[in-house]
Image (tube, rainbow, N blue to C red; front, side, top):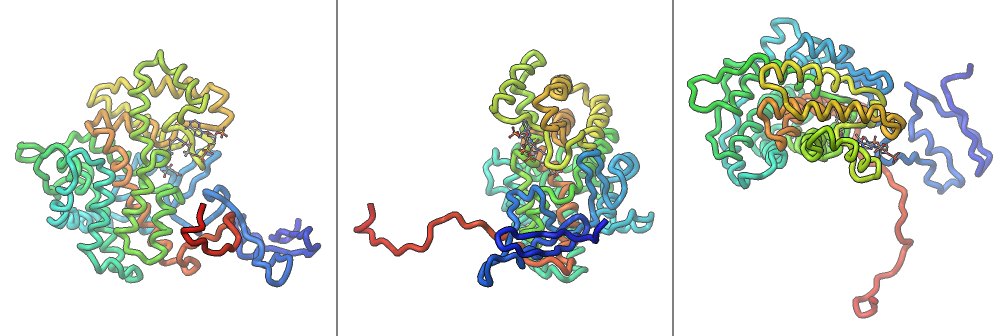
Length: 429
Ligand code: SDX
């Protein structure tokens, strides 16, 4: 066997090149030497939507799409979902190791200290109509926090980064709850730091006039598991956005706002809300064959199905399905679950989906659980953003501290007009 190189012959010139292979990749810049003449720019790679391009080195999350494997810092997702709290997994994703007891207690203390929002956020949120989409409100409110913490722009100061990261993780549930309460004209509920991360979120969402909110422990735990499952997912669309915006040294608040904007799209994090709309539209098992036919005829997609990386069952979907049973033992069965299960059964036997390796992804069952827990579909993507903020921030910090990284600026293949002269208005057709 030869060395770790690839031999390239440019048939335009007959020239031959040896390009090193590292970690299963070649550096695109190593192709620039391949020219047809001295003033030729050199060969580039062309990879719309980055189907086969690594943008970074990362030690945070590992996915094997064919085997349906997902690990955070080497730990299989099912083991973390079974044994950890969400904040424990946050610590792991940010720091690379599971915390010991004192580290975990200190981390929880730091997060609880930061759960309150600056009162100006209330005035900001009051500017939205009652029916504004909560993702729009979240994106705006997070960006606005950049004005509350201007020191966040010192992105190369590690202690400052840690403070902003802690603030963002702690405040996402508070912002979400405020958005929800704004819709109903309910008074905002302040954080109750006696409660766990997810119990406190439920408190801020649903506390009414009772002196102290008491969360159902099964639902609080189910939410913790769902947050663990959504925490990071290597270089997905919103994380790529976080890295790109952060590469200009923009502060973490506006970078998270940009990442959340990417997440809001129906092909990404917005899919969980679209799944619920799809299941409502289908209405009953009897209508499933007709709906699947319409998808196969090119009328829309089966939301919650398919994935750029997983060409096998999304391991998160499997765990979410198990969590559903625990939630429904408290809330009662969500009738949409039966439609979803029948839809999955039929789709997994249908050649169209089998050939394209389309399986249920993380969004297929999550919305059914969220709806059963009392969350409105318009909040589902916000419930995705709450935990994903730790993944965005860990990836952002990894990019900021990576000596190989610099401002993200792809090249292009120009397909426009050659040079031409200005045409005065009187001479235009
Ligand atoms: C998330 O990247 C991540 O890690 C994302 C995520 C994370 O944790 O961050 O996992 C979260 O975003 C999950 C995905 C949620 N989105 C949806 O459920 C929306 C529906 N899914 C599709 O839009 C699609 O599957 C994507 C966007 C998820 C993946 O798209 P790709 O990789 O670009 O695949 P593709 O569009 O090129 O599809 C390949 C073929 C096409 O058919 P042909 O043109 O070959 O005939 O499969 C078809 C597609 O039309 N196809 C689907 C389909 N998904 C793909 N057909 C019907 N229903 C679908 N859901």
